[in-house]
Amino acid sequence: MKRSFTGYAFIAPWIVGFLVFTAGPMIASFVISLHSWSMLSPPTWVGLENYQSVITDDPLFLTSLWNTAFYVVFSVPLGVGVALALALLLHNRYPGMGVFRTAIILPSITNIVAVSVLWLWVFNPDVGLLNAFLRWLGIEGPFWLQSETWAKPSLVLMSLWGVGGTTIIFLAALQGIPRELYEAAELDGAGSVKRFLHITVPMISPALFFSVVMGVIGSFQVFAQAFVMTGSAQPGSEGGPNNATLFLVLYLYKKAFQEFRMGYASALAWILFFIILVFTLLQTRLSRERVYYEAGE
Amino acid sequence: MTGIRTSDRKPTAMIALLRSISIYIILAAVSAAFVLPLAWMVSVSLHDVRGVFEQPFAWFPSQPRWENYPEVMGLVPFGRYFLNTALVTGLVLAGTLLSCSLVAYGFSRVRFRGRNLLFALCLSTMMLPGQVTMIPLYMLFSRIGWVDTLWPLIVPSFFGSPFYIFLLRQFFLTIPREYDEAALLDGAGRFRIYWSIILPLARPALITVALFTFIGTWNDFFTPLIYINSPEHATLTLGLSMLKSQIVGTGMTQWHLLMSAAVMVMLPNILLFVIAQRYLVKGIAMGGLR
Image 1 (tube, rainbow over the protein chains, first blue to last red):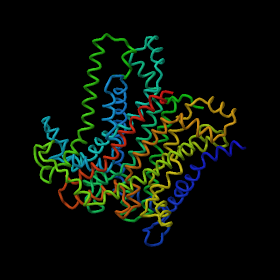
Image 2 (spheres, chains in turn yellow, red; image 1 turned 60 degrees about the vertical axis):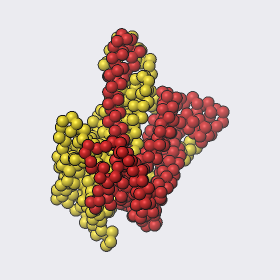
Image 3 (tube, rainbow over the protein chains, first blue to last red; image 1 turned 90 degrees about the vertical axis):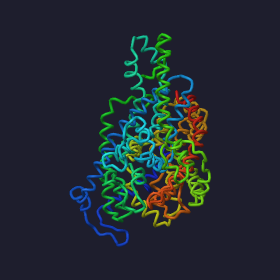
Image 4 (cartoon, each protein chain N blue to C red; image 1 turned 120 degrees about the vertical axis):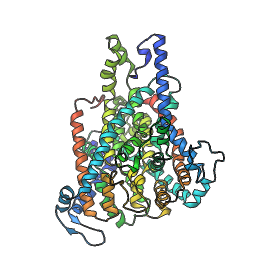
């Protein structure tokens, strides 16, 4: 009994936070989603009408869902793949690796709005760095953010510039693998591919799993880039061209804080949550047998 | 390219040399791709209004315009943004490290009824997008008069963040239980074990969490965008976004000034990282192995 009290005392900050900042607002959010509410006038009960409109009667929602799915499907696997490749390269014990590591991490720790401002200019079709480089290679680059086709790939490309954080997680995991495992495998005659598949991958699988799950959750909520890079001074202009970068959270933000449709925005938030929940549970199920945790209880 | 150290393999000297050279070439190319946009940004920030559009672009302008920096600081209250951001980040760091390590200790070291259930609940809130709670929290903070203040940006960090609780708990689990048991036999209390044994041993993990928290808070855009309306309470991120709308949206082509502002927003971040990176590397080398 005393032990239980000690345990609750340690986790008390989280319990309070959970009740005040998570559970309470969740209930409130669900109740709001059943109302039509502009914040200026009192809310009116509409039942499940908001959900119904979102799913059956809102082409912009479907657009934002497609845009977000595109972003998740490309940015997460590419990001994890690039980060793992970089971590493996950096894991070599050669002199000067520290310089490369710093260069790779640097962009990922910078400010997202500053990065967006920078890349807005990098993507400039005429004088931007990217098309200047492509021109140097003899290729005439696309209009990037101004093109309906290229706007989403542009943001995926930009997201790869920020894989340094994931790289560091993988690098730390690689450095945590005991050398004896490799030595033993070598004695057993395992080649480098076999050692990679049967030692490296299982040993870093918790880090891989963590990064994929976090990557999916994070990119489902992509917002700042689209907000900063595709908007003009006029509120409501974000998400262009022709809604090609209207992501779920951007759409939700516009409904809540530009159109003040709080009930509708809350319904959107719950739908977003449901999608993320399904994906996360799916990944957890898929990885149950594949992720190796040591020293767990 | 499997990342397995050459010494494991004992290849001939020639293969080892070729391997190291190709790794150097790949890494040099990748590093250049990562750093060049940053260098380009600094270069753009030192041009005048016309130089930005000149073709071919002069990477080293003949007369670097350092006065772009004071000019943009006259345009918007950058000092104020910086102080606000520093204050928020400092307090969020303190709140996150304290609360998350306490909770992670409870979840990894103390047995109590319902622990696994509560931990699963804690983990599951990781999946909860902030947008679900955003509107009611806005109402809550608005009711207690915290809208357009820095409080909504700071206070929640003192109540634990599931990401970092999970990260710290995973690390705590790798610390041998014998330390705790020995200390318990010596009559140390739980809090003492947490404070004087686990926390010092978990330094590398705490530093990682601190770095991630710093980066996350400094970069946070969504929270200030929602809660802060007036420039005197804006953070750097929000301030830069306001400036961007001013410059790009209204058709003023002062990209050199916008880039100066972006450089200034990034700079403290990068400087702090250069200092902290040593700690991170040392932490991984020292304690990250086991």
